[in-house]
Image (cartoon, rainbow over all chains, first blue to last red; front, side, top):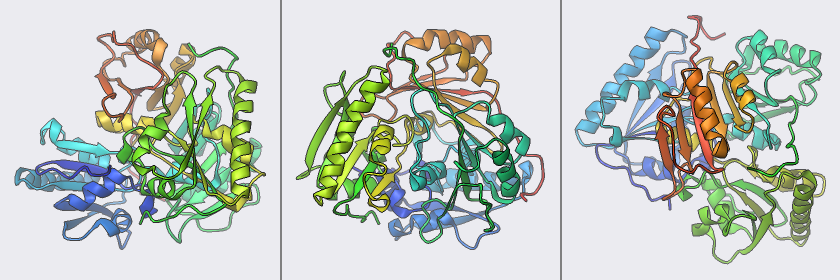
Length: 249
Length: 249
């Protein structure tokens, strides 16, 4: 168990989970420990790679490459940054090294890993690269407030809170709405949820599961004066859908 | 790391992940190993508890209680089953034992754990029970087919495929649609996706990550003749939403 060892010439896209080191999976920890090269993304606005901090206890003799990526929402700049990462990955794999790209959360949900995946596809044999899923921030946020997200026929909608009109539209099509990147739009969001009588039941979790950083606000009806950043999740319980009392087909 | 030990008199609702034992988190493995009592749900239609199989390597001297639960979609029957589990949990915690309830996937996403949480709330001191998130089946399914689920402003909608009209409506409100419990509705779903020209790009994963059981079908346009059960995930890439080229506020 947890004994899958990184193979030479293989590439692993690894989700290290939401931030608590022990919310990494056994597989992620094992591959990271046995890998030759670790690539860790770091936002240009940060001093350290969060993914690297999470995996710190698994890092010893591996070569670590920190990749600084732009925070600008510029498609071309973003792609050219990750194209350089892909070049490194392909070159190291061809040299026979095992390479892992670390990412916070799950690599397939709002992750920079998506760009790397695009860029390596077709350049590494299909059976030589792998994605290792990880617990996402919204799951850690829900666990922190112990709120059931979905049951029976419920629909969960997950989206960034970038456009308040789209958030409002989303309230009509799901039983639980999960919003990422709430940050500067919190006041707008609070007003919207008040209007829909959903504020009191909604929760805000920042830096879910991250040691010494996690903050929880239960109820968005009292107003939040704290500075809320990018790593923020709001969970809005819109309603519930129950089964009809029919037997599962 | 991974050294959080189960505390006496505490209750842990633990997601053991989608099925591969090494996709458990370090925290889940550590709590399970150190716990006095493990409660493992088993569907009345199954011969073994899948959650228990996943955690097998962590089980040694713990007392294991298998809880058989009804598969009927009957609210009253379901609640009375989990009320009995809650009684056991409360009694054991009061006796000073540490108790864990194991569940496949994430405890807050379509899990029987939701019922247990409802029933223990208020009966165990709030700081004496904990939810440990786990990798969900849809994440393992996406990892198996290496498909980015969301990027930038994309919306992800997760729902059971129980009503084909609601599935069709969902296609209009997200960029990625993830369907659970496809089972007997696969043919209907294939036809719907064909109609929307989405079948060729959609993937079906059954028993995601489960050793010797995982099956993958890429593209739902050729028709699938295999018997597809309850543990099935379909990923439908409906579209993509890109950033405007603005800097993050």
